[in-house]
Image 1: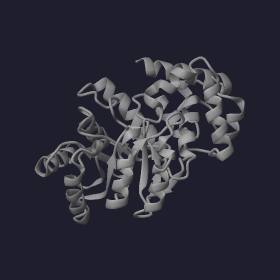
Image 2: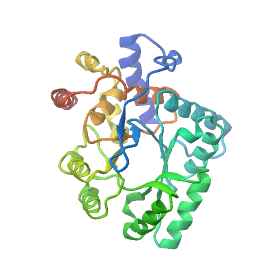
Image 3: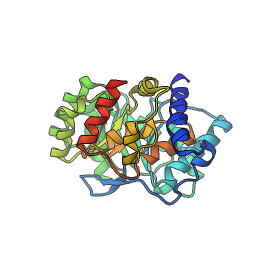
Image 4: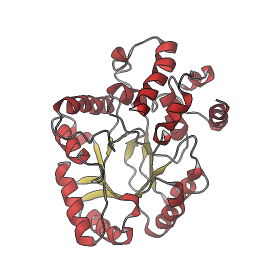
Length: 308
């Protein structure tokens, strides 16, 4: 709860104070604006730059009240042109909740469904992936990723077979800590996954050393997790306003400040902040609109954050 309240405070200060609208009307802004897209290198398919992570946020079981709010989150994702929903069998009931909620939406088949395999052994991996597809109610999964590289050498073979059979469209690998980046690079070079997912944020920039360059060199699409550094970025700026100069780059909240820094890197395809709040989803999606910071502004953003 601490992280969510910190973000709420930051949004109030940076958006409500400077623009003058409430969260109640926020969702009605720019109803026809769509976030930018970037092509998946292995296919050329366009992918919206902002998606939705489901760790913790969609693990709500059968709660009707929480499911109703999450349906609003999904509607905001779609209204701004988003499609990527990332889950995992590690995330409790999240896969099942995603499947149940999207089944009732008219745009169910316009979304991009991503999940993961998180077990050891070929047979166990197949059973888990089939269970995930059933929970998310997909006959074909858009993307299955090897979660935190667990038994990756085994699962790569299965995922390649599934891609050939068109059971999945893409396969990938994931991790969430800096120490994994060199291993991710090695696998990109040797196995050529369609996607790689990893941690990257304005104050955790290890991926800039070589991982992001490697993804470009080998044509691997990137999904960024941990964009808010586990919520610590919002706690850091609590009580402070977004700098005036940032608004020249269509940045009107701290969430947009942090996400636009990530998206302004040319080798990032999509960022997947998790949320269970519709107004946070709107704020996240707005980071995919308007101008993206250039190199000079990116450096200024880093230095400004260090100064506060």
